[in-house]
Structure formats: structure tokens, C-alpha cells
Amino acid sequence: MELDVDGVAERVSTGTLPGWDDVEALVQKAHARNAGVTSGTVADYIPALAAADPALFGVCVAEVDGATHGAGDVDHAFSIQSISKAFVYALVCDELGHELALERVGVNNTGLAFNSVMAIELNDGHPMNPMVNAGALATTALVPGQTSEARWAFIQDGLSRFAGRRLELDAAVYESETETNQRNQAIARLLQSYGRITADPAEVVDVYTRQCSLLVTARDLAVMGATLADGGVNPVTGERVVSAHVCRDTLSVMAASGLYERSGEWLFEIGMPGKSGVAGGLVAIAPGKAGIGTFSPPLDAAGNSVRGQRATAFLSRSLGLNLFSSDVHHPAEGQDR
Image (cartoon, rainbow, N blue to C red; front, side, top):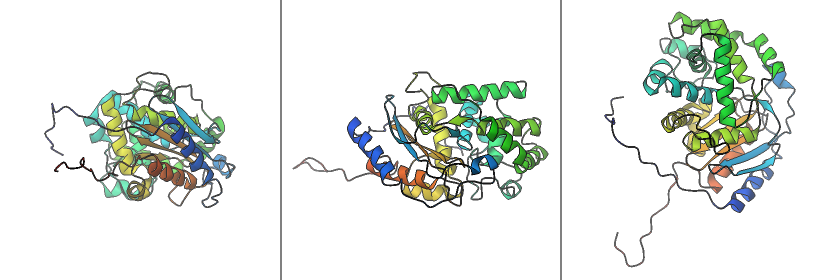
């Protein structure tokens, strides 16, 4: 798109959250009103995920000033899975810049499943966006480093800085996914055949599988989301992780494609950038305000946490987080419009 905005300063206006007590009470309410929901199915196509307790449920909000509010199983560790896509994309954009990331990975929704091969073929080998597997593999292939171990170290360090603590690999999940990731191997080789990735596709898939196997909690996801909400500065550690422009780009892609083929419905109903993972994690971001992290293993047909979506929808409405919501401006009495 030719928009001619070079040199135009970007003004930011995001508003604020309600007071601490209100946020605390609403997080508790978001958990309580959804704890009894039993719909959804735990992911079983990765054997290590199939054993997850469907009753686990945590909700956490991290404010941009570092305050956190949690309810339920907010400190239960689970594998980050596809949520890693958003944060690895941010790290790569910070290294390579806006234009190259746009050219090599893309930003448009496929309208198809997250592991679709058809989407690649229909778009002349272009991975389309970094939130589906093809785009995530293309993104991981762009991670700097001379070896796969160097690229893995870059990702682990970067995601740990987003979380504000050292994130560790779940070896059991990594091994389980390695034994069942033939489709990702095929996608990587298809991208290689189109010239979309130049690295060894087997190594790219291995690094990608490791990034998906990092252990996080709902609290970690909230802090990671709050880092994107706060212009790239982790509100807990005070460390700058990525630039504010990278946060804007990342949140834009999350808004368009973060909930896979349900992304349009998510944006229509909830109105926040978000990203889901098949282990049951979900992160949503209110720019300038907060990050929301939830965890509940039962998923809908698209692979998105059922309770996580419901809790986030409640918080979006009750905390005033929907980016598209507004109210009538009432002038002072006796004042003309």
C-alpha cells in the first residue's frame, strides 16, 4: 500500500483502566462466571497435550504500570504453542524492520485453518501472515543466528524478556511434537520450493517446535501482553524488549489473524488484538492499558480456548477495552456543538 506517511509523527491516545480495586474485582468475576463452563475439547493431536486437566482455568490482567490481578490457576505452567508466533514475529520485526517482514511474511488473513497447505498454494507460495503455521515457519527462518542453536537461544532469550523471567523448555511436549509434526515439515519444504525460506527446512521446524514447547503461565502471558501494550517495555522489569513501532505492527497482525479463521468474529465481538494456543493459552492486549492472559485447555473447533474467550470478552466489556467502542460526547450544558 502506498500511503505517503513518511515523516508523519504518530500521536497516541489510549485512555486508562478503572481503579485497582475495580480491576481486581472484575478479574475475579471473569473467572467465577466461567469456571463452570464445560464445553470444548482438549487438544489430542499432540499426545503430550491430551493429558491436560480440563478443569484448569486461570485469568490474569497485567497493567502497564506493572500491577497484576489474578484468579484461579494463573501460575500453572503449560506450553505456549502458537502464542509464541506473535512474540517471535515481534523479535524478528525488531531485527529486520517493517518492510522486510511485510514482504517476506505478509499480514493478510488466509480464512483457512492454521495448518493449511491449500492457503500456500492459493497464494503462490506466500505464507500470508505470521499467525498461521506457514507464516510462523517463515518468521522463524528469519531469526538471526549462524546455527539453529544460536537461533533457538535468540528466541528463548527474547520470549523470556517479554515474560520478565527465564522461560524453560518442556522436554516432553517438545519430544511429542517432534514425533507428530510431519505436516509442519511438509509446509516448510513447500515454502522452500517456492523460495520463501532459504534455511534448512528441517532445522527451521525443529526451532519452531522448540519455541512452541516453552513453558509459560497465564501470568506470564499477561505480562508479555502488557509489554506489547506498553510500547515494548516490560512493565515488571522496566526493560525495553522491542520498539513501539514493532508493537504496533505486531498488534495489527494479531488483530487480523490471531484467532485463526475465527479472527473476524473475535474482533467483532471482543475488539482486541489476541493470540491463542492449542494448549489452552490466550493472550489479549489493550494498547496503553494492559495485557490479559488466560489458560483453560478445552478448545473450540478452531483451536481457541473456550473459557479464555469468554473471560476475555467479559473483561473487554467491563474494563472498556474494545478498541472500537465509543460513547456520545455530551457538551456542557448551554454549550453549542
